Image 1 (cartoon, helix red, strand yellow):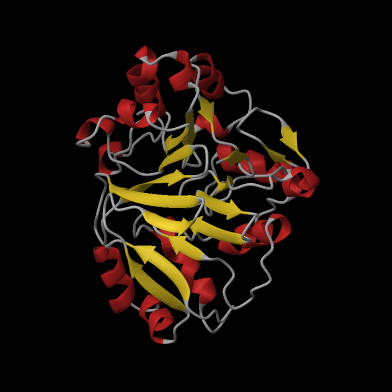
Image 2 (cartoon, rainbow, N blue to C red; image 1 turned 120 degrees about the vertical axis):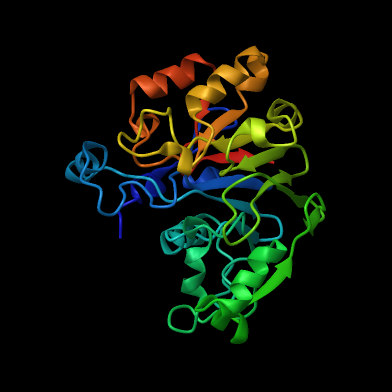
Length: 316
């Protein structure tokens, strides 16, 4: 297992105001916790012998889990996860540390899936009888993804054994989590081989979060991303690749995402206060923006935007 726990022991970062929160300062009102910021393979990525991963391994420093958000309500002692990643065991350990609920057979109040690419649902396998043996964990997903999980093994066995209970989502229809929290899925264009792809808006007592970890290109969407940013208080947006030179020798058009460099250009006319909401997430292991003090990171900061930080908190 990758060694991701250094920051967990002492602190999590508050993206609200840039302060460091100790374990005793975790909010007592609803918040979002960033459980991971990397693309589907995590960082470092298995089999990668490039300097980006080898230098991290040799240094022994912390890498990044696969992208996932937790929605936590300390008042009701409920916790939900958006996307169940290959790093789910480590991410669940983080939740147990900061938001324990003492329900071993139902470790989360619910799971919401964006789509059926491996980094976003493969962690469900941990809920099966060979590992956790959970009972009826609610997994909310769109119709094609629901059908995929119901009909394709080993996921269908999780349904048959009632390890998970599949719940249908409808685009643009809010789901009430409790009296303080709602979550709303919306469709985005992506490589939909097995399922639809959605982003989510998470609404709390005071603020809203936009989460779009995967989308082909902003201009392919039937909504303007600028308007979506304006309507929320924090936007975690697809930052998979920094630019089109990131994967030499590979046709990057086969894995379309909005490059961070494109987003920087597109968002340049937004007011400072709106650009400050943007936190790029779902970074590929080759993305230079993962590297501290890199030119890519400095470029993002100069543009008035941010790279999402693992274990960071945003109060709702």
